[in-house]
Image 1 (cartoon, rainbow, N blue to C red):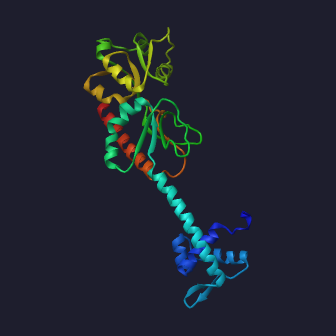
Image 2 (image 1 turned 90 degrees about the horizontal axis):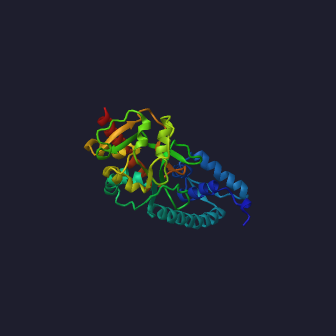
Image 3 (image 1 turned 180 degrees about the vertical axis):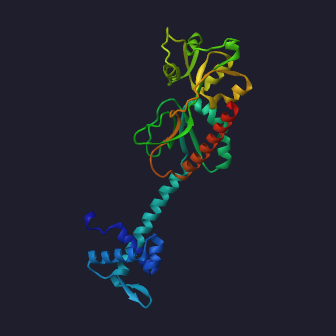
Length: 302
């Protein structure tokens, strides 16, 4: 096919709308453009084809024989395009909403709340993939990633969901009555860290602490860290919103807390563009839950 010989799609759409509505004004309303723009597109199409397509008939418009011939061909062609596009849209809307996040985020923050989303959006099929691995975006694959960082992912759109506000916490049964005043004192305790992350190194570096010896770190899947903390297997650094209930219940004790504003935190990361309806619904829902969680956390620490 010689694509260069085909008129522009916008001109063919304009003519097809005029052929259906028999009016430049009505066609313009259908296409959300002015009637003058529609008229100009049709006149340009006539000039390109070298034939008259539209004629005046009383107070409306009619088609010439060439116009009728072109209108019939475009009617079938556009109907086929429309059906194909609608099939693709239906497939895209019906496929599961694929979301990836770290295991600790899934267990500590998302799963206790996800039933609310299911109740509000029963038509959305969810596919949750808790993993510390960075998952690449591909057509028909991951729709949304909830990642920890500073929001800098080139080529992707990132919106901060939760500020980091990290706390170092441990169970009373592990800490006893000991009061820690120097960040370097945490080196005396075993440390629990989620596989694939490096919270301890980040926190110590931020406090200006140089480890005096090899650190006692146990790397665990994210879903096991919180249970280990409660049992007193070690201490850990985590976002306060993950452990707020345990802090309030007295199960865990805050050793250190960074109250400075941070650009780092958990972000909603996705490919640029208009999100499909299920993704838009999820983003709206999770941002509202994040605001509620942060408000609750702020009230408890006030």
